[in-house]
Image 1 (cartoon, one colour):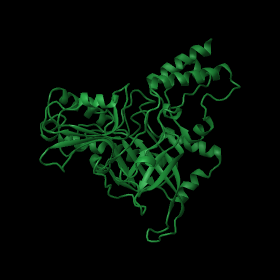
Image 2 (cartoon, rainbow, N blue to C red):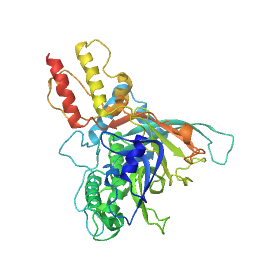
Image 3 (cartoon, rainbow, N blue to C red):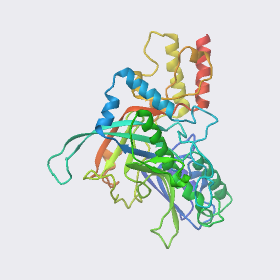
Length: 432
């Protein structure tokens, strides 16, 4: 009821919103998740508050050869840890460097090409890249019925967003909405703000950022992957060729309604704008990849009711403010009793599978060896649970479900503001 009231207060008379499983609104940020909107294009003053800042975030994957994955994961534990450290160092992160801005700029030349160099990397605390493995049942050949058996698969997976281009697009679009400009005027007219060129730029920015991160990760891991020139940079960079490229939080013209011009804004996975389908579980549980009944990545999602979308993120269990307090309490207990259990309840799993680069503040707690694990690894979100109940309604009941589990992953650290507050709090305890 609370979510419904927020939507009724935001949407105009001719707008509509369809709630998917795991739909929610984050009370702290006002961001909607797993809702698809149809917004009337000609009406003035679009609802600016529904647009989330992480434009064109998503997940990109490369399927690896079994021998390449085994060569990395079958090493001795100390060698695996060294490889993980190398992976972490190879990926720039805004959570580790306050002066860093990742992703291409929104502004460009007349041919939609980059006006300046840019850095690929993590643009927020929910980003990650690394090796994910799965075992799933499939036939050795789609034509061989009744011969299903377990198949092992390993993917190089990256979750990240559009970075600087997305942030700039958000600022300009919200400003235009608050001035009363319609979406048609803002996004279709050449002199509109942000304009059609900016929309084209931000549409590609997330995929380009993830493709470069994947290439950087592959080089750090010693893997060879197929690449293509990045045409939007005049070939200055190369991009990894992805097997799956899933896009969420995207905006596009809904061409299926010519008599009622509208725009579709999806805070979930838009199958029309994606190559393949996947949905997230929590950070420690991994990613759920959806293949066709014959094991193909590309397939048509027959999902009219939700406009060819499926849920992307899972429900938030606890606000960040409460989670930070829980983390601080756990590390205070550890500082009090160094011989007791680790602060993190699943420390062995977390430190063997995940690595991160965090900013150092020179506090007493850091000198005492305190390391704050990223918030997603502390149970910020629920595990995926919609497939068991809503697979038929979402049009994926016949799909092969491949649950990819983290094996060797670089993840973004705690945001610097929260990390600084945590370290200062713990330093007071360390000095006491």
